[in-house]
Length: 372
Image 1 (cartoon, rainbow, N blue to C red):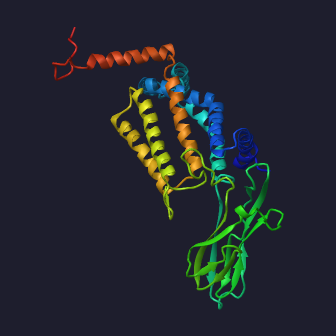
Image 2 (image 1 turned 90 degrees about the horizontal axis):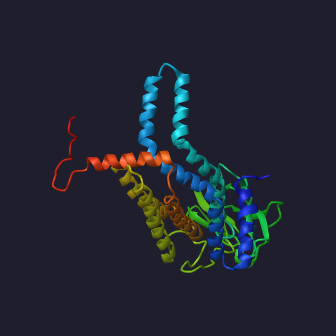
Image 3 (image 1 turned 90 degrees about the vertical axis):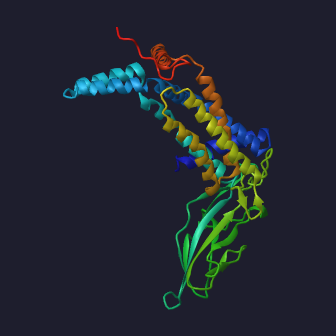
């Protein structure tokens, strides 16, 4: 039995979506509400990470100085060094403490991501290979392997679903002969979905090596070489619309139909919100170097550019955009909280030190303290 990402997707995420869709029969609204529910449920974990990050931004230089002193002082006494390290962590906090909440919530985030990419919001695509062999080398068709099971939702009511497999993963075919790709139920019977979810068979590369009937999945070997075949089962909600989003399951910014302005707009907004989020944290980090600030400025462009070359469905873009907005609001709220007394005292010392080193308007260099 699967207790991993598939379990969370089919037994947690999709039932919640089914419930939300029953209240507001629009999958875009359901995705918005699901995102808010998940982010709200994870609030304590992410809040712990943000609070710890905020503290580390202030205390990192002092911690490094104290740790270095302890290592030099107790380099020949490992037990004493361990005690001193524990005392420093007790006073300022452990830098790794903020990582644990992120690790705990990763399975949930992966499950949500998988939910929005697969059926019913996205198409299920099986990639297979046709190896066309000369008749002198091969005389009969040799299919190889079967895909792992996939859950297909047959209607807008997510309670109606079937488990399917694709067969084969690859096939060796002599020149001039035919083979067949199939979509089956996990019990081996034929998959008979509604007309709008009928599987589509397509040769995506190697059209001079093999052709395929888009309705039956029968492939005809033409010449020796390899051909790549995609078997697609459409998502029942993939073409649902929401606000300016034309199709929730459509991936990419461009296609043969032209530019998808909805996906392009969400990609741009993702970059803008990511930039604002990083600017917000760097602005409140007194110890951030210029190099780190430059990296933060480039990161949004890099991630947004990735979505051009590795396209995501509109539903996933909607989720990550909403997540960024939620993160910004959460950060603004938490950064208004007072710091622990010892951390605030350290921050005040750093500010007084910086202000003392600043030159007056008519001075070209920082003032030096007079010798006693």
